Image (cartoon, rainbow, N blue to C red; front, top):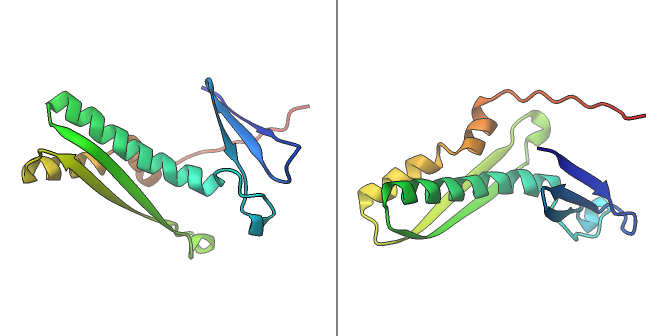
Length: 133
């Protein structure tokens, strides 16, 4: 799978991100020289965690026949120490539906094991960058 990021030259910092048949905008805030017309790279990183938790909980609940209805994940960023090597993400999970306390706890445990959570906390990511001719 390829993620393609292409500059929108009609704006100071805006880029279009294309994945498969989907496109979203990335931009920086006005304070950082952009127009605030899209997600910042940090927003996308944080959103990946929230989306993964929500989708993992729903997938698991469907497989186990757990009657979850609403799922909401909130991700709070604390980047105050990012330059020192510490980036904190706090997540909260809200569930609705006719759920027992045991089912709610089970779904919380599942959310904590979503693939992106594991990727962010347990994997070493190696990145290479090449310049095309």
